[in-house]
Length: 341
Ligand code: SF4
Ligand code: SF4
Image (cartoon, rainbow, N blue to C red; front, side, top):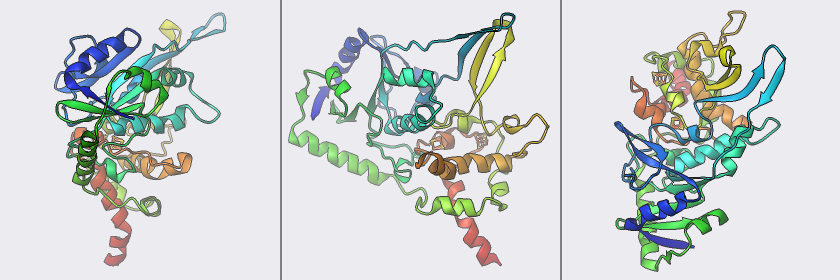
């Protein structure tokens, strides 16, 4: 069922939710927007054509988190319980909601499920906002997603100018939006046209068909050295990526606490072994790892692509490295090398 919410009623709705849920919504934070707690009258960044800079994965998998307490002298361990609040994340973009479902395959499936992730996921509703005007760095339609895709969402809002059309996608969302007026056929048609126009406005970034095989075949080739030449190894592309999940465990002896911190395969020490051997000694291997993980290894471990085309790694790379161009170059490398010989 589809409903209409006049924009001037949005703040009152979020205020009502706040009585029962912690509501997080995109708001201005310096030059960017971030998901911050909503407190009336917060000014929301919903017109912003881009995503928040910081990826919403941080709301489930914080950048730094204590996961265990211990008493060294007594040899005792004390678990830290995850006690999450009921939350609504409002205004999440479809690519980022999809990223949360991709991270479910890492933290919520198989033998080693993460209790912190599971607890937060169970208590959180994701209310999405489609992208009428995707940014120049967005390429979700090339990565099995789209500006109005609904993977992972409890409801999807489409901006119709003076109002939002709301598509309810889960039972949990029905209670949140009770009492709204159903959308009429004209409004539903406008949404269809708008969604089609947004999808068509996104150019194809690369050919996904066969890409994994092409990347696998050039694993040992020189193309990775060429692609990584200007990389600074700063790790921004991975820290801001909504699907990257590398972490490091550190025992902070002064506070008897084990802490989990985000880490990145773009750092040399990430793969440095105790013997001093490093299987990824240069940026060539580390750049290859980043791209291969998203576009080859994810297929192997989850049967899915590990990139949602959110464009953050393109937008924020300080030297302008563009994963779309890198993938085009890597996938064309084999046939170019063949022609050259
Ligand atoms: S953001 Fe750019 S420069 Fe920094 S590690 Fe990633 S690709 Fe390299
Ligand atoms: S690899 Fe880049 S475009 Fe893909 S999900 Fe990560 S940050 Fe977004």
